[in-house]
Length: 115
Image (cartoon, rainbow, N blue to C red; front, side, top):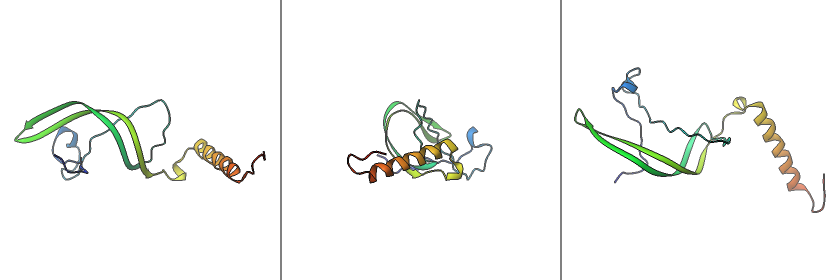
């Protein structure tokens, strides 16, 4: 059984690494697509629920390799650094400021009082 966390970085001279230094680590890509904006941070830690839908184990040049295809069923948590304000879209900044103002009004509003 594997010990967690698993560092998925690998070095080698496969086709995907031929253009870079052999000592440089390369990581598999997880591609996600959805119909709403979820504001994922630029980097961080994500916990997901998944279902393995295929697994292939091979030996090449005496080395074992494994390929796994996963269905990502749910993102259960995300922790990370947000992009800097300079990288935020102007519309996103205005929406965030508007929400901050509305939330501060709701927090300071007396019962029965309206703005």
